[in-house]
Image 1 (tube, rainbow, N blue to C red):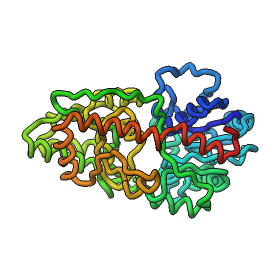
Image 2: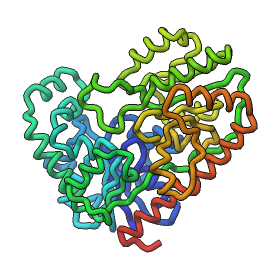
Image 3: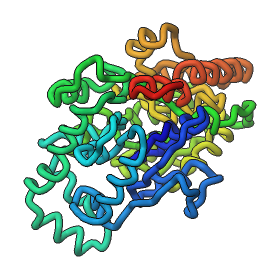
Image 4: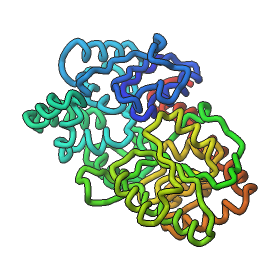
Length: 402
């Protein structure tokens, strides 16, 4: 079977495409964005900008140029219609009316909660063009919101509704998104509850056992509710809980930490202020936003990884950290995942600074326990969150033979 892909948020679809290729299927992968995070070379070192024939770059200066009638849109439709089935991400569902083949919608967050939500159409104006600034400002001021609604929001909703399968995170992790899917008209039987990572691209590495406990977080530093009106239900990560837990550890034990954070997220400056007020700044090494390859390297160097501690959900970074063999401290949402997979997770469950501190004290004292939890995390991801297993489920739903 030949499977066409459009859209690649955070390389999530590309991981699924790689799994399908491993299972013997032919893939045509259309890269729609120039954002580094959404390009294969951001995660896969063997894939450079000179793509192999099965990867086609259809990106343009205007972020959603494929939604406008023209040669690019025609080319995209021709490439996808030459396949047996398609998997559509980002604005891909909005192109579905041009397709003559069965397709699935692989939703990753904003393609549902923003692109398919008419209440958020105004948020999309600045994203149409990133640079130059004057052109971005021109579009932001003059383009009617109704244009975005008719070109993206309404077709996106229609494309999601008509998909043979809708792949999205488990029910209950994002109640507002669940409600939006119901509003759009996605039947329960059409939904595939799945989260995954490409375990084959994440090597398991023995613990480092650094002399000073090294803690790393790749999770976005977005944590203040109410400052930004356009935050979705999955955006808040509890970064302040993490920092206060780290502070409790240093004050209760008298020992320092080697903390590594990434300047990514809405509230980096506010978190820097919090670190300074607690006297933790000297223990923090800041990194600029990095590629997924660099994130994997940081996991390998770390003793412990911190993930989201609010009411969101652990993301691909958390699953990659588990696959690397690192214990992670996070709100792993056990009330959702344990019934779904049928067993407790090895995540060090925490939603408060006190719980973060307790885990840090225990894990720092026992390298053996860190190693044991790391091995359990790798096995857990392999069993329940492998892109290979999800690929088989999706293809079966699309009628593709194994």
